Image (cartoon, rainbow, N blue to C red):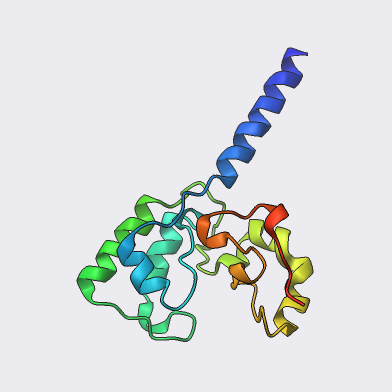
Amino acid sequence: MKKIFISLSLVACIYADGFSMPKATNPLYQKECASCHMAFQPSLLNQNSWTKMMSNLPNHFGVDASLEKVDEQAIKKYLIDNSKNRLKNPSNEIAITKMPWFTHEHNRFKEKANKNPKIKTLSNCMACHIHADKNDYDEDNVRIPK
């Protein structure tokens, strides 16, 4: 019985830790990044991924997202300081939609989402997770646009 309790407690801690994502609150990050897309929670990627992303802003998913150097450094520090370095991401992938945990949860919606003009891409979290910007990904608040 003790082994079962310890195992369940461990699973609960891992689950809770894996899904705890502080809201993206940095005003500069909100201003610069959320002007084009949702300000993704820094804990969605690890430190190496954020470093890789921030080092190539002139080619940010095909768009020039260059920033003033001082702003770039401040945002990079914020992202790294608030990242989840334990996330499994051996290739330091920068696309959240290609992360193993994301594809596990969303691949069944990929084709339908890409064809839906209200969603367009799985990176448009708020199309379905209506409170994603508030760090609420609860399945009770998911609305898939028709």
